Length: 460
Image (tube, rainbow, N blue to C red):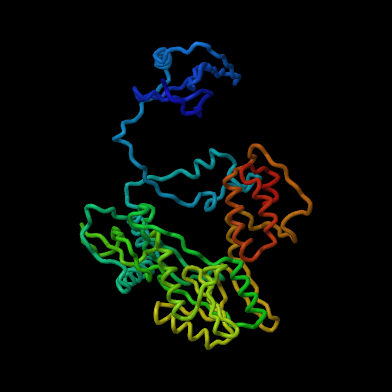
């Protein structure tokens, strides 16, 4: 007796596995026994016509096995001891960085083309040390070396880890370097940043982490507070917490391999005392830490949004909004904001960004005379237009035509993954500064599974 696995991809046939012999079989003439009083014989013809025949007498299982074993198409299952989890290095799909010649559509022209572009590269070199070596060999290696040294000094200054012998009875998580260039509203380079992160995907729930949820500010909350600030002429300032996660203390024992460049002897690992970026519970630990600090300053989180904190004793009340390490302060008096900045600077290492001009990828422009605060995402929208090769597209006044309904398709006519990627990219400006896109995104999102040329044209 064999177990049905489904249909084969190469031909019109069923696929089975015979467990006693550990062999795969591909058959077009099979007999299904579902435990009833009758069994059904199904034959898949080459002209795609399916013929069924009901047998009133059940054949012995031995006859079925013999019939299956006589079929020439078979594969031997690999031995269990040679199975291993493959290692891979992921990268940005090539159609975002090396666009192909225009073919009348913005997406890859076929599934085969997409498969070729998404080919995974395998290497025996450690990804972390490979990336670190590349950064040190880069023309800007001096700047990256300074960034790595700053990160290492930050770890030592904040007491993030203890060097201990590698434990034999506990799992050690990996680590890696992440390199990025922070840019401002006009794409100018602000900072070369190097950061050590843990490979938190190897943590085990219930062993080295429990709860992981950490709230972040909602766009609706930020819009509401900026509206109140514009209407009542309140002061709006911003601060940034340097290495925010490293301020939260861990309750669990987590051991991490030393990243490349750290001076750690062989056989020794890092026992984490603070929540390094990448740990499963890192965001929650930091939120609990900053919430307790704001509570001592007289702020209480609201029920509607746990990242919005209000100080009721002030008249009018003052607010603080958290988005991970970005802190937005709203108050009537500049003295109140100055006092809050000093209190936070005594607890954490902060960057004072003065009045709010840039937050969450949005450029903030304030006109006190007109009583307005304007949000703009020109930089982000320009990047996604370039990413999807629409930089030269002509703008229109409205996102979609009125009373235009598009029919649902049974099969996609274009690359569905690329279509979904474009929808996802436009969701961020829709939530941030372009609410006029909401209806169009909702309508086009209904066809994300089976998009057609008509939906592609509307999206463009």
